[in-house]
Amino acid sequence: SMVAFLNGDNEECEELEGMLLDEFQQDSEKVEAYLTGLDDECGNMREEVALLDDEVNGLSDAQQKQEEYATNIEKFLDLIQTLNDHKAELTNKVETLTLEKSTTKKEMADC
Image (cartoon, rainbow, N blue to C red):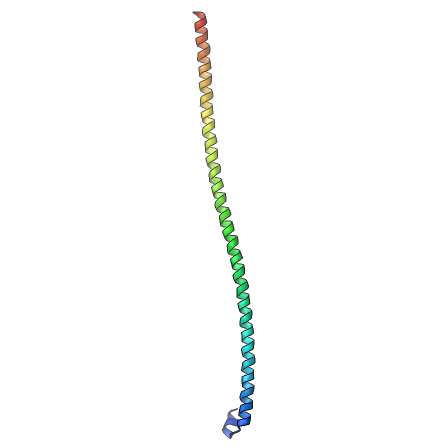
């Protein structure tokens, strides 16, 4: 194209410029199609990341609930132990009072 320009051949210059413009246009279309594909791929990846985030959040929620349940179970086990201890104390008191009643009854019968 430089030779045609220097020789003053405008037709050849225009033809060469047109061919060059066509090549640039084709390359531009290829690049644009490639970028559109990348945009689509990025969109798909964003969706996948969002799904994974939701899954992770769901797991975090489940883990938190599991920890709360474990804490509640520990509290209930402590309460059960406390109630069993209290029951044992009451059973001992009943046995003691029953023995005292029996002794008192014998003493009164002896009188």
